[in-house]
Length: 170
Image 1 (cartoon, rainbow, N blue to C red):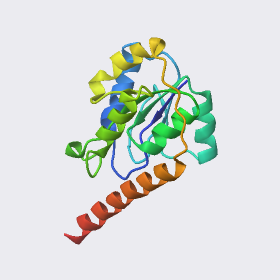
Image 2 (image 1 turned 90 degrees about the horizontal axis):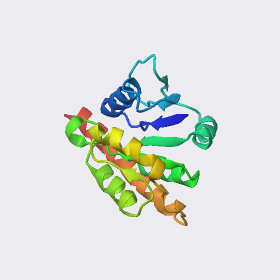
Image 3 (image 1 turned 135 degrees about the horizontal axis):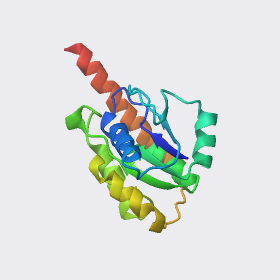
Image 4 (image 1 turned 60 degrees about the vertical axis):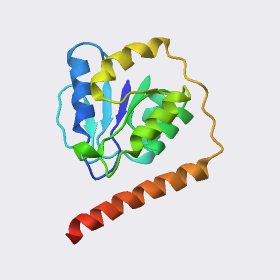
């Protein structure tokens, strides 16, 4: 089973879910795919898609997943690595209205450079990333920085809230 995490931001990330579906159609992905889509509205007969999955259930799905495809959020990446899963991460971009800024590019690149994940910059790289998974041996991730992760997540959430507030103030 493959778990896809699109994040819980108030913006959609259709580019990634469309590319996952393309990889099912072209036979690159043969396994069952379960998606936590958050605010991304998408229908497919090829995947099981849920808006939100309760924390206990998502943790169970992470345990059972063969690998995880995720947006570039620190929480999704770190929690997947803590389950010792192979992870492909794709950043959301502000130019597509997927996030308030491009901080996920830096997050994905940092984890990729350390060898923890396969980080890609564009969704059209997903097929190659999936094909690399069999030979990919991630570096062991260990974190003594739960507090740091929380601080980063709180900062990002504050940016999201500020953007929402600014949008309605206009």
